[in-house]
Image (tube, rainbow over all chains, first blue to last red; front, side, top):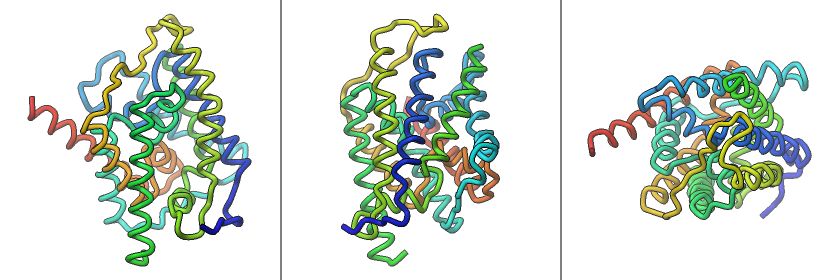
Length: 144
Length: 138
């Protein structure tokens, strides 16, 4: 294993992570809800009720966050190198898998691990493993 | 107040994702690529998020209602079943393919990345398929 020192951003990543952890803590302590993005979005597809309106507000916050970030820190680096077909397949798998597995990186990886859930630990280890295997196959076997 | 908090938390969450590098698919794939040039940054995102999250969720677990007097909803299931395992495995394959997960996809959409729209629509379709299968199996 060779570390990519040029891309390594320990401080920005750690502080960004702490802000994510703070957000998740505020949502559970003030609103009593888990900040799992796939759950928040997926909950709107079941049968949206009046008490689900907060989900739209949370999603609006996510959508508006780049504006706030730009004011504070300048343009973020966000580039999507994948082609359309890869994005469609990846999106379908992410959507379906996160609902079947009851969570994604935020719900299991952050909120679940923060509350020491055994289910979330298993989920996180599995999706990290299949993601790493996928990257290995795509990058090194097919030379992606 | 409830909806206002949700908006503020969404904003804060998105800023955290942007600062951490999670919204950049190349950085995510750089972390998942253990056999290539490895970028350990995402481990630092997890450490920061769980470090603070542990405090919040430890307090939340001891409480029945939130500060807005709303019942705190924490998942009650503890069994590790086939759904959890298969779903997480499928999610990971999708995450590894493009380096994008749901939160960062919405943030990238907000940043005006046109390809993020394609990903988000496909993700919603994937969630819709799950919903459809669930309804049909009942």
